Length: 227
Ligand SMILES: [Mg+2]
Ligand SMILES: [Zn+2]
Image 1 (cartoon, helix red, strand yellow):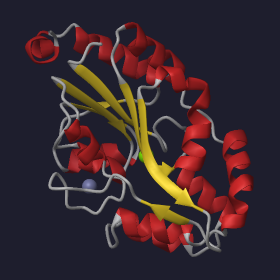
Image 2 (cartoon, protein in one colour):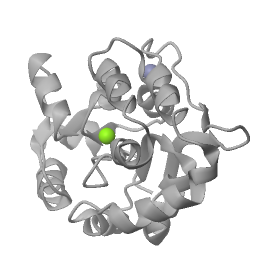
Image 3 (tube, protein in one colour):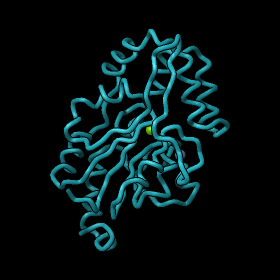
């Protein structure tokens, strides 16, 4: 395995066209979800707090219905499979880091599973009347944002010359400090610009493949990222 490169990717709004959490809320939650989401995006509450609040609005009894709806209605971003095949040929690990819930993330990614090295996400619990979340990968000294699922924490655990993170929103901010190259779309683009942090913009995974090829052949990254 080429351990000098590791690619980490967000799930919601990155691998998927639409943010699955927002889509689930719009379809299954009472209208209060909107103000909770606003509070998360405006950083008035932490992501961990917000995600718990959001899912606590939905009865556990709707689990199967939600899963079925996600599998039928959420489209994959163009070029995703081709990107996985591209990485696989080069023996570069691909790791999914999702602040979403295991019961739909694993099912959704099933057709691609053998091309994915690992999946990290939160665990959904359906024992009580409303959905509860168990956070397995919480922030440590790397990050104090109370992410719930801390991407920065997971990325920091990996040893690699070159860590690449792909994302689209506020939940990807914890990855900034511990990644060497960032790919961004959506809301993350604005946030990174405001923070004057370098990134490569993308809209689909064909763009990511093209830019990745440039990185693989770039002098600037040769020493750092190549064996
Ligand atoms: Mg996202
Ligand atoms: Zn964190």
